[in-house]
Amino acid sequence: MSNAERLLICDDEPAFGRYVRNVAEDMGYRVVVTSSGQEFIASYEAFQPTTIILDMVMPGLDGNELILWLAERRCAARLIIITGFTPDYAEHAKVLAEYKGLRPVITLSKPFEVADLRAVLGAQGSS
Image: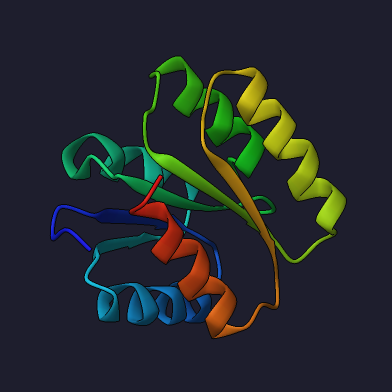
């Protein structure tokens, strides 16, 4: 994996953010973890992520609002949508993201295995 891979994570569960950061850094990603939509927006421009992991259900700005925000900016990063709520919620968000021009979009449902996360992150460098 190229050392240019930058992962921006937005999840309101700090332990989950640390978990994903540890896996991604082991795979060669530079990682920034944010725990709110506002923090995500503040970090986005300066970090210029190549991959984004976005939780759907968060207080304040939720995942759908951030998808619309990313679409307005014509975000070219790969988007991984995650949720512990229901898999349908992530699938609906994927449809919204793709309709708004964000691609590629992958979904994962919490909880997931480390191997699943590694597979998704590993596939990112080859798309």
